[in-house]
Image (cartoon, rainbow, N blue to C red):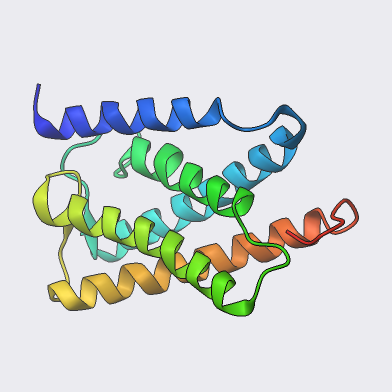
Length: 162
């Protein structure tokens, strides 16, 4: 088994095992967060592939799409679900900013290292620094849009913020 297949299997195991820690009364929020972020990563990945910015040489479904299924449809959305659940509610702005930076950094650096050291993705355009900047920018935009949507959707149910 190649290192790429091992990484994909490990990501699936990590994603499924973290789902078990979601409280049952929060499963609705987790599912919506997961699906919303999954839709944005799917859209962004398809756009990046079609523009020729990124290619995914090792994929699970080679004939269905040109995108890696596990990272885009399991791993990054699970990171966003935990971003939503661990969001600070009544804490200072500095902690909220650090929370955003931490989770966006996790997603961005995972994407960068997968592109740099494996065949799961390859950045075609730009230098390493430009690719890091682009992944930060893209994930920041995705996190912001999805966060605002989740906040709006659960506005009536929230007592202490999201």
